[in-house]
Image 1 (cartoon, each protein chain N blue to C red):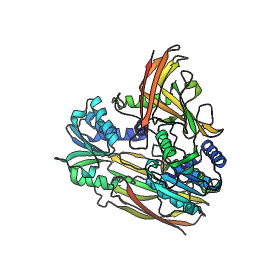
Image 2: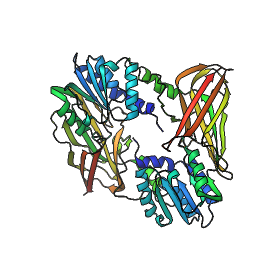
Image 3: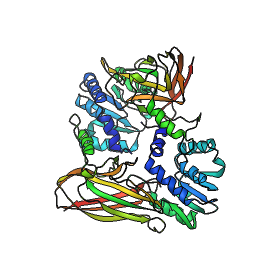
Image 4: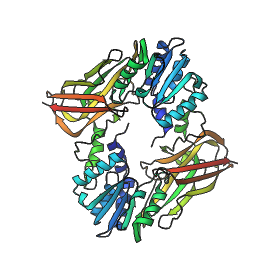
Length: 292
Length: 292
């Protein structure tokens, strides 16, 4: 059981995330800028924007407990007078004037699975000045088929518990995509770029693609590993790849309902789509794969 | 990010928990018994009760996604015909006939913090036959003042993040009680029994007590560690004490908003109360302490 402090501490103690955002904010904010912070949490990105010279920050937070805490933390740090605290989804927010900069950290472990794309496109269209900036400005998402012994260990335990199978193949149950450490050695082929998005130009709220993997060795296909490069602004970026420092996202893992043996030389055709969820908090994810 | 399968796997792979419940169910169920399983999850306690000879199990689950999964898992294991699936809170459930046995695993990391006491008393009064059994039949809760370097490390990081204090003393914010490993060496006094409850006799939905700790060494009081002994039935029990095998509960930890230095020979007076929460899912917890 994690409490609210632990949840935020995990984000705030992630140095890869924090250092990249801090650099991006300090290199983007100009004296007197107005800023819109989407998904403010305890407010650190808003506070950094004010420290960097912003004159006012609009911050929106959807989780009621966090929203309450955010206001108290801002007051405690003497910054509440330069902030407007919006409660709810950013897509419902109206501002009287467009802002100079949008800043947001809505990355899920599969990059796009927390509705990042529809949220940022909506904010850019409705709330950003012509020529304004967005942090992040873009993102590149990778997938690769992989083995995952930790996952197989978890599911095997559930498949036979005192003679009961607690994890049958249930086509209509989405079990979610856990964050797990995936090593390069676990991958069953070279990774592929699933999608590369420029937020300033993006038009579609849906991200979909079909990629083909060439299986490089025999193994048990447990699912698909995923990571992303987040381009915050200019040359400032970070990555959640297995080759880089581990972040709190670790790697994303899309588990198969039934693992499947694959052999070197086979091809895996993998199709995936992220589309907006009416709740506005997550993305709807559909995928399909075939081993040939 | 844990997914629904990982969440249940954590419970189902906890051998201390599972072995004790399995023994208790097999030693309690008589051929043809009817059973009420409160907070069924994926159904394992219901399935064990049926395997042990129960003729019918009523199971109630409040989380909608888990309730859906529970029904599918029961069907997959060929047991759905001997089960009635109730959705929601047990306190809202009416049964046409009282049952022979109530079984439930609603232990929080502070034992009573997931509304266990009001739920079991209500079920005993309204839904259990005269002379019927309840698993768990009782519980004993312990507290001790402790140091907690992991917690201090987490909060220190938040107290000074780029010059901002993200964790001010906020009197009206309940940060929750994380599960953490607390070692005997971390304790600042002998533990005290906070409360010892017999579920068959219990009348009060509120659990409250005042205990005094004699500080045994100098140290930094980070908060109060807690663990419990769960008496399932007869002599079958388990414990979450630092002296026993680690369970998924680890130890409970009630953090202080501000850590405080204490010295050997001082006394700590500690008052705590758990009372029913109107939502029915958690307990309302109030506490107060004083170092003398």
